[in-house]
Image (cartoon, rainbow, N blue to C red):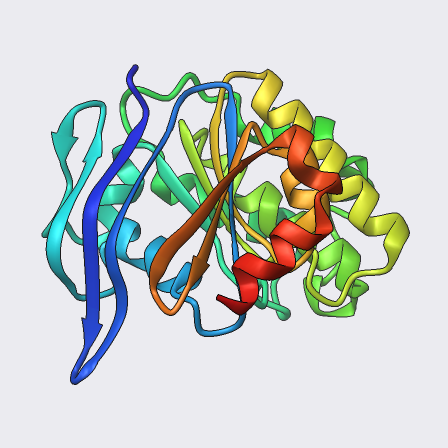
Length: 234
């Protein structure tokens, strides 16, 4: 598998161009960070990959094949899963029922290990499997949202602000899980507000500002605060 390739991507909402000429790639067993100020185009990039944002230029390829113009459910069945900002779990359903909703995104290529992987990474999902999702804490709901995406046994995992609003202890759990997901061979594209921590975790991180790529950083650049701040303010 060659992974995910985004080439010269442009996204426009009416008169507003949210993303301009963005190129990046995510290979199996790699975490790529996408960071930048609010309104930089990070979430628009994820939704464009999933087929739910209007692409006006460029290409998105999965294993070398363009997926531009595909419906989100088709993209999901080709092995891409999105953990959206705000979790979007179904509070009236149980934890187990929420997890099983992720199975709808599976394709014939899956080996069926997605649920087992979710339970292994987040034991709380097994412990609370019969509990209504709406009574879980915010951190538990975030683990459920990631677990639901993993249930589809994807090859590409997209995450939109997974640490937003979480306590530091839960952030540690989420970031450790991402490390294990990468080590299992998945390709991970991570949109995050915690810039320095993302740069330290990811194999490579791209800084977006005003819809354009401003800077690319490696994990060793996490301590270079001045460079990071300059990229945000450029």
